Amino acid sequence: MHDVVNRRFPATTLILEYSFFLLQQDKSQEPAKSLELAAAEYETSGTPGAVQKAAQDFLSRDDGDDEKLCKMIMDIILQNRMCGCHLFLR
Image (tube, rainbow, N blue to C red):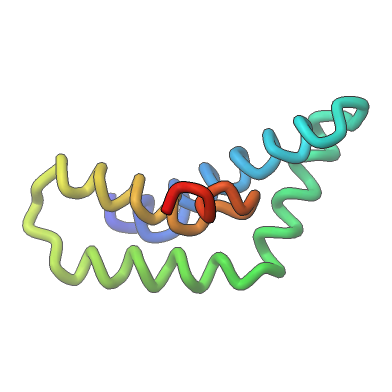
């Protein structure tokens, strides 16, 4: 479970969210191309390091509370959104 939280779930969610954002910006773009662009941007953005650090920080304090785990995942995702939407939530 920790490996999924640490690497896969937040990254996948962020890439999918950014892909959706790209599709909304250019409705003529193919979904597969949007996903490819989002994944490439994710890898070069510095976001993977921030996500991994945030996950490791939380998991080092993990007490087995699933509710806290879900909140942590959502916080990581919201704080690292690549579309810039999080800037308007503060």
